[in-house]
Length: 212
Image (cartoon, rainbow, N blue to C red; front, top):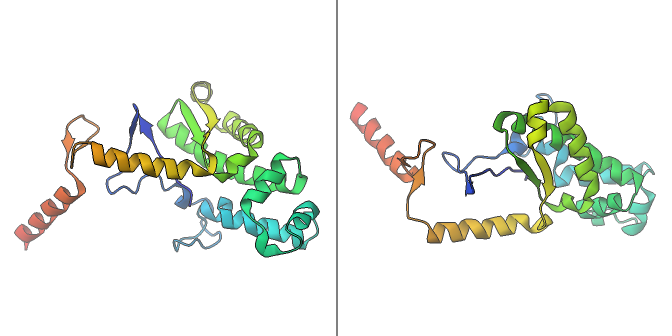
């Protein structure tokens, strides 16, 4: 999947039910392809690993990706997004075309978030980081085109050093944070202790019982 995490003053931001950051399911084309979530036209249908793989296979079948075909020895089941990203980095034109298309869609979505949240840094992570400079080049072009100048000046784009292992590192940090932080304590945006999900559910049940 495709997700976003927000670090605010060094702290990971959690949504009301930890469903924040579902950027992969924002609607890009309302009448587009059906997504695994049941909606249509989600960003994920355009830039997910499966969409990259499908486009690469289509190129092989049409005779446009000979180098990729040679590497997998004609076995389409061996085509992976990681192979596409590596070939793109090496200068293979068809694979670079796929990567640039993916990054343009990702850059458009990221630019919308930057316009709303005004962060000072955007960190791209995942296996697509294998394409390195192509990503930074395409994201910079998209941000230059889409962002207000004042916002563009303040935001930098970098690649995570953990690449495809970034999610594993993030999950480990969340576990450590849960173990060593104060139990059942979260802070609202006003700096006051906010109710946990469990506490809110209890309050909701009490309200429902009182109104019954």
